[in-house]
Amino acid sequence: MNGVHDMGGMQGYGPVIVEENEPLFHHAWEPRALAIVLAMGATGKWNIDWSRSVRESLPPALYLSIDYYQIWIEALERLLLQAGLVEPQEIHADKALVPPVEGVRKLLKENVVATLNKGGPTERVTESTAKFSLGQQIRTRKMNPATHTRLPHYCRDKLGVITAIHGAHVYPDTNALRQGEQPQWLYTVSFDAHELWGADTTASSVRVDCWEPYLMAVA
Amino acid sequence: MANASDNKSTHDHHSHDHGDSHDHHDHHGHSHDHHSHDHNSHDHNSHDHQHDHAGSELSEIELRVRALESLLIDKGYVDPAALDALIETYETKVGPRNGVRVVAKAWSDPAYKKWLLEDATAAIASLGYSGRQGEHMVVVANTPEEHNMVVCTLCSCYPWPVLGLPPAWYKSAPYRSRCVIDPRGVLKDFGVELLSETKITVWDSTAEIRYLVLPMRPEGTEGWSEEALSELITRNSMIGCDIARTPAQLAAANGACL
Image (cartoon, rainbow over all chains, first blue to last red; front, side):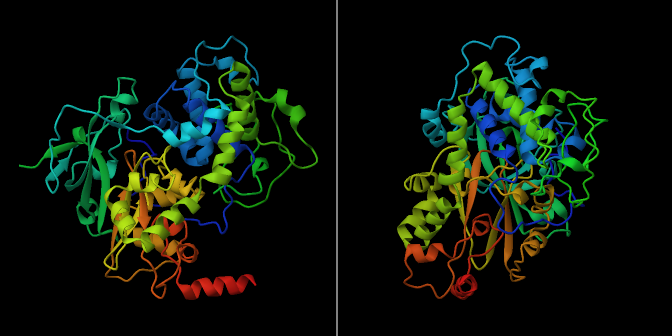
């Protein structure tokens, strides 16, 4: 989706504001927000691509005006509704108004450390072979899907070189739509910064992780 | 990012519906007018009793998060003790100290450094760091010729097991937008100026591969223990927004603390 979340190369946001001795959290609600988002993520009722898709689908002006944990909360409310775990009238109530969905896998305290240490690896076994090889030149696709994708706007339809092959990984473009993991080969592609930006850059190269469907062979 | 003194009172809420009502993280200072707490057209009247009129009134977002937490506990979807354990993990166990240990070991042990650059996930896991948002790790080494920086232009992907939770600036629009086009300008915002002949490579973490920068070991540290070297490694140097401190900078910093 060509949204405001796709920020690479955008101009006018001003300097990076670095806070001296920045605290881990700025407000008391932030750790609570972090914890409920992580705990609900652990229920497996949605996947990370679905949740990213919901975050980047927030109204653009809203997305740009709030902090990241607020984006998480906005998205959590929407995910809870989309997944059917809560009803709209419950969102701003502080108690259940209808019975819960049965069989939700609850993250228990004793499983927190093990769950975090395990994480959610995305590499999958595949019987397909990688279409591209190390050092091969490719061109990224010219594409503008209205749905979730992880190929940033600034590196579409650009020439690049494969610099790493990471195996087959869950494909966000389908996983976000609940169309399954459909693992695809994942590559790191190196772009010469001038290919991306012309002369208006101080980078030498930009490396982007790209799934195979994002790439085309160059004749 | 967000002002530490919550700017909840800078906005009157009466034109908002619940989907759009927030305290914004702008930087317009502290001109809060405390008379504008008009909650009559949104749906938080039931929480008014929670307001502490001694001056720490709860913000809109605080109320929303509280309501959600209460709802999810009441529904039986979350374990309150698990919430506390999650927070405690990132407050006390998982943070940049983990990454510092990885870097200090790589500086001290050539075999470990080789392993780290070939299979970072395994080399980092051997020190006990793995899992969420660090499932697939790659370490990129700075050299005199090439400086590496890490960003996530699409969201805020960050290697949690080795660096903890990302700082506000990493998640901010200025960093996410500018890093891939003008990394040298971004470095200036951090007070870092590299030699003009040093090439800058920017890694945009678009997939589930997470990147850690291995900064260059400063000169004049021959024979230093891992523990001593750790003092030179900053969190930002492992993102590529800083370089490791020199022994002289460390001495000056320590002197300033005395």
